[in-house]
Image (cartoon, rainbow, N blue to C red):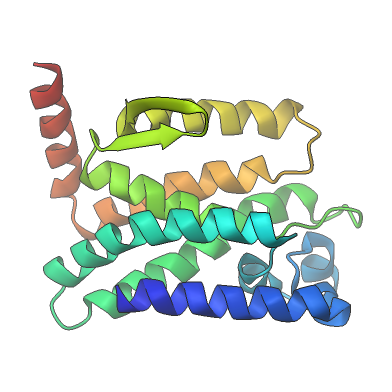
Length: 206
């Protein structure tokens, strides 16, 4: 998991730096209005390395730790020599893909800004679900394993609903599109993964 550790280390370092340096936080946050009006498109990426607080950072990095290794291992196994680099590209592209969703909605809204690795960690989680749709997931306060594919359907439904109706200051739109990107990108690289996904589901249901 060297790349996963590298991403965790970089995210923690940048987040801690921004916690203690407000100017850095303001300069790096994903701010669609500044991106559109000033051409500061680097924010589409850098916002994924910032977090609101320690709990926000901890939750995202725990998710990345537990599922990033599996996805990184898949990249390494199928793309000998370039797998780890391709996994890193996947993660960085996931940040941008999730940010683009809110960019197009809020580019004329100077009040809106977003931070956090949740879009990218959602991508990693959904790539893991694609590879193993019946993997067991646990929700806080629910000590019952939930099959990954069931969790994924609920996650997409809730993220879509919350993006339209919630006022909790969470970027649910980025969560939704990050998850979609994480599911689709590996299929783009290896189309047979979609068939294997349905075969695993059929075996599980049958």
